[in-house]
Image 1: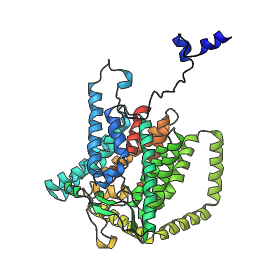
Image 2 (image 1 turned 180 degrees about the vertical axis):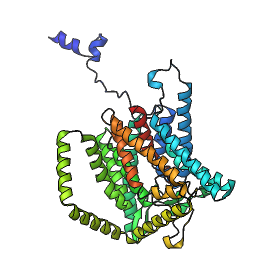
Image 3 (image 1 turned 180 degrees about the horizontal axis):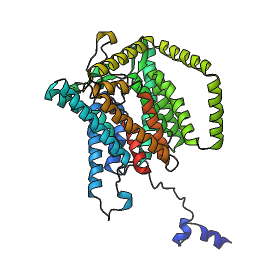
Image 4 (image 1 turned 135 degrees about the vertical axis):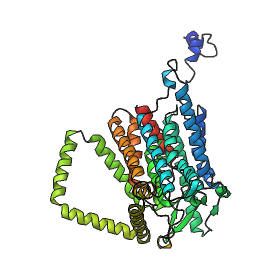
Length: 445
C-alpha cells in the first residue's frame, strides 16, 4: 500500500502522463476577446478611447479616416482574392451593400445637380461633396468594412466597456451637478478642418436645453445620444459575459435616460415588440392573436384614435418649445422643397436657419424632410429603396443567421429615429452599429 501511495506522489512519479493527471488544467479560450489583426485593433481601441477622442473634438475627423482605411482593406482583399484563397479569408460584398452604394452616389448626383441649378459655384459643390463623404458615404463605408474578417464579439465587448465608462461619467456628472460645479464646455481647435460647429463642441457634463438639464456625452446633441443608447443596448445584449452584458445594457439605458429624449424612451420597447412580432408572425397562435387584436382595434377605432391623439399631444407638451420648432422646420422644408426644387432639391442644408426656429437649419431634425429639401425626390427615392431592400433582406435571413436579428434591430431603430433626426448627420458617432449592420449583410450572404 505504501508503495502505491508513493508511486502516486507526483514528486516520485517518473511517468509524465501520471504526473500531468495531478496538474490543474486551465481552460484556454481559443478566441480571446482581444484584437487579432489590424482592423480589429483599430476598432477596439477607437471604441475604448471614445471619450478621449471626444474630448479632443476629433471624432468628426478620425471616424472618416478609419472608415476609409477599413473600406480600402475590404476592397483590396476583394480584388486580390482568387480560387486559391481560403474560404475563411474570402470577402464577398453583399448585394444590399451595392444597393446602398448606388443609392448614396445618386444622392451625390442630386447634390451636384441641385447646387448647379442654384448657381452655387464649384467651390460650394466641392465643400458640400466633402460633407457628403463625411455623412452619407461614411454610412456605406462602415457597411463595407463589416465584410472584413472582424469578429462581432469584439464589438460587443468594446461597446459594453464603453457602457461601463458611461456609468462612471454619468455618476461623476451628477456629483458635479450636486456640488454646483461649472459645466465643462469648449470648442475644439480642430474646427479649422471644417464641418458643422456642433461636431467639435465638447460638453462632458450637463447642458441646459429648453429649460431642463440634459447630457449628450460623446454625441453632438442629446437626442442623438438617445438613438445611440438604443443602438448600443441591442449590441450589448449579444455579449456572452454576464457581467459585461449587464454593464453594457445599464450604460446604454443611462445614455437614454440622461439624454431626456422622448424618442429614445419610446424606441426601445417599440423595437423590441416590433422585432418579436416580425420574427414570430408565421406561428399560428401569433397570427390568431394578431387577427383578434385587429378585430378589436377596428371596433374600438374611434377610442384608440382619441387615445393616440391625446398621447401625442401630451408628448408634445412635455417639451412644447422643441415640438413647435420641429413642426415649423418641417413645414418650411416641405414648402420650400415643393415650390423651389421638387426633383433635385437645393443641394445642401444651410448652416443656420431663420431666427423663427432658433437659427436651426431648414431640413434638420428629420431625415425625410431633410433629404427632400436637400436632394429632392431623386435622393428620397434612392434612400427609400435602400432601406426597403435592407429590411426585406434581413427579415428573410433572420431565421438563418443570428446577426440578422441584431441587424434588423439596428435598422428598425435607425428608421424610427429618421422621423426625428438626420441619421446621416452623426454617422461618425454611431458607426459601430453600422459596422455590425455590415456584418449582418455580409455573414448572412
